[in-house]
Length: 428
Image (cartoon, rainbow, N blue to C red; front, side, top):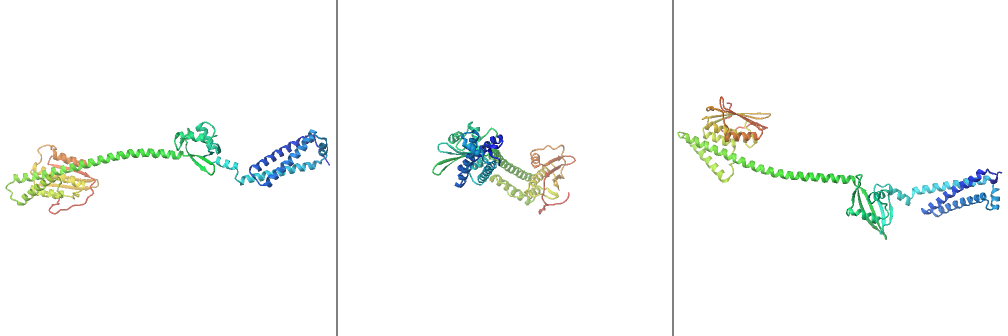
C-alpha cells in the first residue's frame, strides 16, 4: 500500500495548500455562526470542523518543515488512501456547512439582510442616536449627503442642521432637477433614536408648480371677469336708459303728431280722436313725472296713434312678438314711417310688408302720400331707427324715387304669426 512518504513531491506541496484553503473557509463559517447567533450545535460543529482542518494542516506543515522527526516518521508512514479520504471528508463537511449557512441566511433576518433591503428602497433612510452617531443608513441617503453637504454621512445631527438651513420642512431641488422632501421623527424606547427620511417628490413638486401657475391664471381671469361684470352692468344700465329715452322720444313724437293733426283739421268733429289725444297727454305727463314708461303694447299704441291722426296701417305678413328684439325694432320702424307719412307726405295709408325667411325678417314700408322732392336726408328719427336696426346686426335702406320706400332686414327672427283686433291684416 502506498504511503504518504512515497508520494510525488508535488503532491507533498499541494496538500498543505488545500488544507489551508479548507481551514480559512472553516474559520469564516465559525465567524458567521457566532455573528448570526446560530444554535449551539451549529456553532460546535463549525468549531470542530475548523479544529480538525487546522490540526491536519499543522501536521502536514510539521512534516514538510521537518520540525519533529517523530511526527514526520509517523505521518510519512500513513496510507495515502487514508489521507485522501480525510481530505475529501473535510471538503464535503465544509461544503455542507456552507450550504446550510447560506440557506439559513436567506430564510432569516440578519443585519446584512436588513442593510441590503433598505439599500433597495426608493427613499433615503438614516437612523442615528442622540449624539449623532449613525446606526443605519442606506445608499440613497449617503448619496444625498454627498451631493448636498459634500461629505460622507458620519453624524446625523450635523446633516440635519445642514438641511434645516432651508426651513423647518426641508425641500431641496438637486442640480439634475429632482426634488427631495426631508422629514425627521424621533423614536424613544428607552434610548432616543432619530429617523431621517428623504422622499423623491419631483412629480408632486411639478404638479404643485403647475397648480400655482394655474391659480395665478385663474386669479387674473377672475379679475378680468369682475371688470367685465362691472362693464356689463354699466352697459346694461346705459342700455336701459337709452331705451327709456327712445321710448320717451317716440311717445312724445306720437303725441305731437296727433296734436298737430287735430289742430290742422278743426273741421273734424270726432269725439273719439279728442279722447285719445287727452289719453296720450295723460300717459306722457305721467311717464315724465314718474320716470316709468306705461305698460302698453307697442303695436296697440301704434294702432291708437294711427287712428288718431287719420292714417290706416295695412299689414301684409306676420308680426313678431312686441316684447322680442325684432318686435321692438319693427315698432320703431313703423312709428317713424307713420310720422313721415303724416308730416312730409300728407298720406292717409301706410303699407307694411313683412316676410319671415330663414335668415331673418324682411320689412318694406310705403305710403300713399306725395313722393319726396329729392334725396332724403336722415334726421334724428331716421338716424335713430338706423342705429336700432344696425344694433341687432340688420340693414336699413331708404329710397325716395319713384316713391318713398323703407326696406329693413332684421336677422334671427323665430316668431309666429300675429293677429290683433281692429287691425287690418290685408295684402297691399
